[in-house]
Length: 356
Image (cartoon, rainbow, N blue to C red):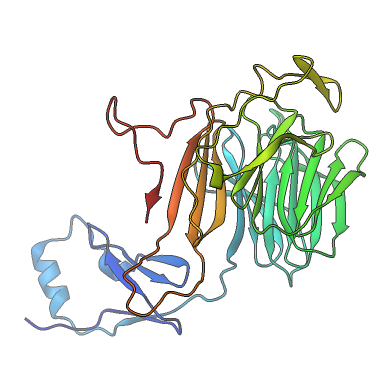
């Protein structure tokens, strides 16, 4: 048996790994943070080709196909999916914001663009898909009002301007309120809240840089948010970003976020929304695992309206020579409704963290 070159890809990056598809008609490579999928025509043979034709083809001398690596592809730098919708939007390294069909992955249109010399780093989409906002790595925040396709124009998305602001500090998160009246802009030293109705800033709150900060929608009351800063969690109001429940640190475990006791069973927040302190603020069973001094909160993800997933990574620190101590990435999943971390088997509780 002799071997000959039939396909070659030229590239300058280091390939970390290669894998073949089960049908041997595709292969995959990983470079940096990307996975590339290749499907060369030379690997595909017609199903009705006879064995004689294949043998004759194998004996022919043909030049190998040399394919240059496509380094001109514009990389996706931010991604957001519509809630309970069949669309998603990407922000790219050329500053563009593009909408796609989730089922077919087909590009529908470019909604708008930042400067071509910047990358989009954060995107937020309101629950009804009416508003979308993005920020680039130079601190420019753009927001638009969208009109979804209609029966008369089933493929047409209409875009209207909303905000276009530039901030001096790095914006780390954008979040629309469930009522879609407000947009939270979280940065290194300021929390800003803008109105989508008046198109003006309502207020801002200064804060000390406490490392990674993530805001999440309250799963039961649209007038509230959950703020996670480092190893502390607190419940805040959309109207002021003021703390409804004081933050608790993991050092006093187990943590229970219980309804606060007031002289009245209800309170008013913002636009007059009533908060039942006995029912709406039902996070009394929220528990998290012990914190480790060698860990840093890296990422927080909310799954649907029930779960919060916290990702911790090892912090850089001194480890004595010969020490057998090992550190690893760890995930926590918190059930906001049940206060449990789930179970693998009926009656058996899962561990409250997962090492990777």
